[in-house]
Length: 394
Image (cartoon, rainbow, N blue to C red; front, side, top):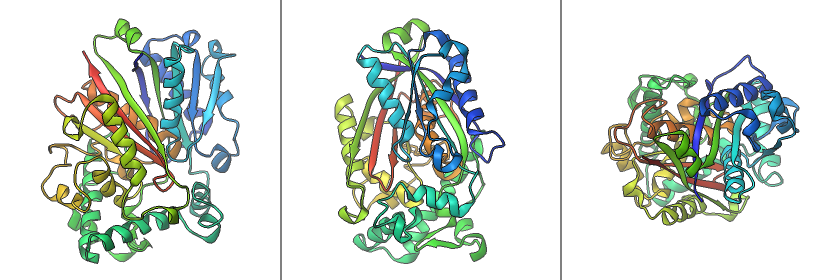
């Protein structure tokens, strides 16, 4: 039994005056409206949310979904948490329920309201997704964790400081530029990579050597939602549907010091399994939306999805492969770097982006003739990894 997307919603990803409750309800109502499915026909609701408690003093969030529509009262509703991959984790649970025959129609919402806290508070709350005893409790932040990947990559592949910095600036500039066409994006700029490199120190300070401010994703508020059902039922409602052909999860050691710090090992394994399930290779993809919480993460993602051999990722920026008009556009939406990263919403956002791109109604630049797309979402320091393949079914 296969599962397909029949309704989507995406909010602005920015600093919002709306509460987490408002964001959740708006997302649920809008996705239901888009799907054409009545609230009374929804058999299960899954909420992707990383830290409603840390950000909003609301850990028990899932029951608030009853406020979307009175007809949802008594419907099973569950919050799913897996750090920055909470959204895709929620999709996976809903997909499994449909495949098991327990659910006919599922509503999945990803939501996070982060700007209730100051920078120090956000940093601590996010650090709770690290291995706290040895990382968060010792002052290690997520910029610090991903800085270790940047240093490891530089050392393994013998890059100079300037070579690494130029490569990361090219990723930032690409995603800022892509976001110019994304109406939901939090930050868009018509910048070249030279513009990034030439920013004065106070506008692009070092956050965690060698990562600077413009290597980091944003503190964001937002929500996204999808409605799922079997592909058979979806075809009764739509002439063209987007099938979630594969969704694979792999998990690595939580502590960074137990893993290589120059590649995403478990991420590669998730992608390998997803390709094998569908019977495709990277050459069959038309686009990818990957988890660029930091610019180094996008660089490592190029190699994790098999687009380049280890150490060859920087060449993809120079030859245009990953640009919107290239062989495999990566983060045409602007990615987390520019679109924004309300952490619990990110995985569901990726599902919306993939679905709308395949239906020819993209969020951001249109990729002509797209029929297969990959989303890559992970939680923690590339610990909880989710690779999803979306296919257009005509």
